[in-house]
Image (cartoon, rainbow, N blue to C red; front, top):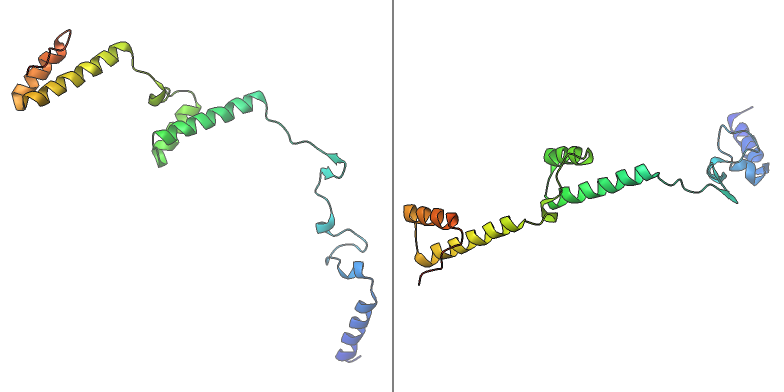
Length: 149
């Protein structure tokens, strides 16, 4: 049979086939449902499986991950520093974020004393050794001396 006759016979046979058989994927059995038309496994209509909920331990780990990630963000950590921080934080070996800690009363008193001493240095226009000596004495005093005018 000549080549054109074979092509014509194939076209005639193809046109004579039902529409479902024409759209069948190559290599599948006749009458089989094509993969695109099949529902996903486990999600049949009326028999849907609910999404699996994480356990309490998994929820705790997820919360720890969120907290550590937030701390790394507030500390502006990147690359290796962030990776190392996350490793330590997730293992529970890092202190809480500095922004969450409140200074103790002693620390607040020391900060106030430093603020007062520095204000006095500025008003007296001290520099060099005179400034260093004054700040040392000012910080050692139980209460900051009153600013002289």
